[in-house]
View 1 (cartoon, protein in one colour):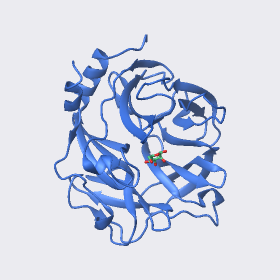
View 2: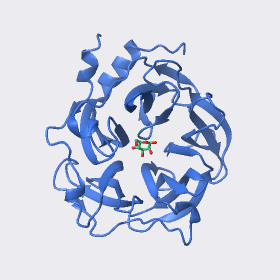
View 3: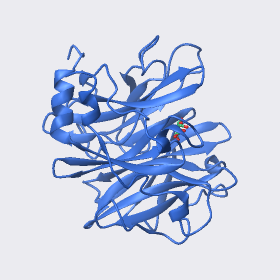
Length: 318
Ligand code: BMA
């Protein structure tokens, strides 16, 4: 497959961007990087909304088809709560939603922007109206986290992206385990950032939560290329073993999605595509992504095409 064909993997929706700040029922600067899940027969997005102070909160949007006619909460659904959770002083960002099958409730891993830097916090909910905060689970600087929906040998697993202050060491994707969703250990690098001129050199992070397929857990991750005119956020694929998610079975060399359209190339932060959620409709994945930190856009892809492409382009020894 040549480099033109990768463009056929994800198809942008013609109505993009599907949600902008103008669609919100209250004033804000921008709306982007939404978590996604299905609730009943509706798609629910947990929008990251940045207000006109620069502080982010989360707001629920619902739609029957996940494309049009979004019903957006009249007021912020989940505001930062610095009085009870000081780590949320500069906002809450980039939610990734996982339905915990065993607990029959959703877990939301999000970035809390603390005075010590961004960290990973966890909240659970049954209804997306009331949220039970578990507080910080991984200290700064750490973000881009999502839980797996099931335990592995009795333990929960989380993917996340700590950043080392040790210069030149890189920011890699890690995996950690917990018996109770609170105490996390057995930390290890899962997918390392590459080096040099690669699109995913030096800094990578999980994008939406991993998706279970019959071939393994499909991972869509972002890679950040630093250039003299700023960073470029693009997306690549990897596959983890179904029973042992520490085992990376496949990874591709090339990116599969990159900023090209105006709403991806030009915004508050230029050249960014940043998904935090995707939803399966049969074989079709609906990928919800932030465009240039200013809007929400939708792209669709066939899950079997993604797996077939990754198999063909796998550079992982296994
Ligand atoms: C990352 C995150 C995202 C953001 C992206 C581009 O570090 O903070 O929320 O979309 O940068 O600015």
